[in-house]
Image (cartoon, rainbow, N blue to C red):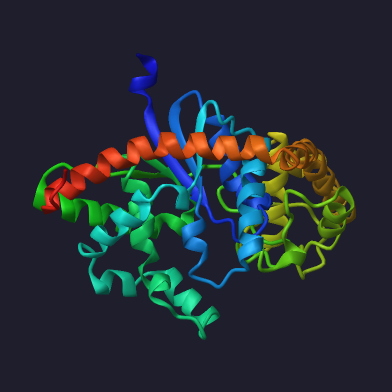
Length: 334
């Protein structure tokens, strides 16, 4: 009976590259901690990846490897529903319906469309414009109470809520209106070489991947940008010392120490001591994840079984919502 009363949560990450420290500390680590309190659905958002051209063999490989990394990060497939977005056709089916209840002006104001249009100016396709509708379908299919997101993703939850409220105003209470859930710690991890921007796989030198070797991780932290005033003081100042603040946030998230405790720990020692210490904390945090993911990647039969069971569980929930929507809009059903 308790299981039925749990609040439901859903989120996903594109398999457009290897998972990195920002994904782990900003999202996946928190997901794993919530399994006792929520009914959790987590997916690999492969439909979203093809708004940018992908190498098919690489996309298939990343999709299975990302599942292994999810599990290695603590997402038990017996307690969480883990699935590949393209394995549940209801995502694409609901997206088309919701396209017809989404206004052109709403989509044209989406920040990420503007950013990606500038970045991929030779491939400004319709999917790049309408992907927030697919994201709304991803969410609304499962009637979740919460969607864990970073600050930069709040706009997508907001348009999802707008679409759902518009549909409900016409047809009644079809969709539950989800709330964004933003973690207080580690919600946004910045690049080691670009501390003004979120950590991204597109800037590999400043991005720590979950599958990086210990030596690569140490090297990246030794080269991490700190500040230009040569103060060489470990002090939290997000505005004037964004690189140091980012490293302190990473260290705090991994060790559980407070910012004042970190300032006291490294008082008078400078960045030459601090940066390697943060790097070593990351090495030890990621070591068991990397080793378990490597083991799981060799067991494709198990990973395929997880995907199959996850798609079945996800489809059962998603199809109930889709049937309700189809009935409301007037589609004839057998």
